[in-house]
Length: 322
View (cartoon, rainbow, N blue to C red):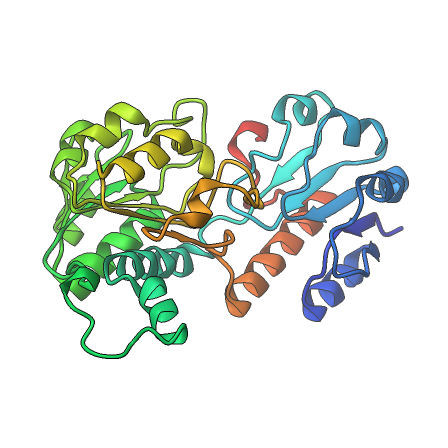
């Protein structure tokens, strides 16, 4: 008998067809997010859940007595209550590595966009303000040959470093919980202590995963170490920085600009200060959001879930639940 699986969001048809070969599939048909009360009802008989950010907590588990596995279409899994899942023997999987190049592309896009003031100048033209030469008040900064500091040298960090070194001739340094001699040799990057990296970099890209150790890793004291011309990019998780400290640094001119794909609260509140700041690029958490990458992530998540429910070992079980 096939295990019952619930899919709580839209996935490509080929992913659904693959799942249907091995599972009895029920899914949320609407384009809007599934309401929590409906999700809990749908999970009453489910053995598997395919999701991409739904909070898997004690409440959900209590309403899903047959639940054996949850597969998330994401790299991050801070929406998993790991203690509760471990207590009930629920397997949790994620989708690392598939999106490395796509997120690295976005990090470079934010660097270029913030440095060359792309969004500001787009508005300038569309609002009919371009009547003559723009003047130096609209000039930006060069990316090529600048100094880049990467915080978190995992696979995405290496992909960013590769683009920066060989595409833009940047001088790349990194900070990581452990040094990576192979990456240094292959990519020509340097390891620096965090404070040194912050002090010497023209661009700083946050790529560290969100953990208790990285919670608000970059705050007021760290921003004070940066150059007044520095541009700060965050494509990891909003909780890795102190947003209030970043707002203060941008308003005071402690640093020059920021490019952000992630925020402490998502979606970002309508009255958030970032939304009125011309020196901040704000994106709606689109790091992996290309059609090809999202399709590949969904298929990997589906394979993880099928493996978990058919007695095989999923390749991408999260470390804490192995």
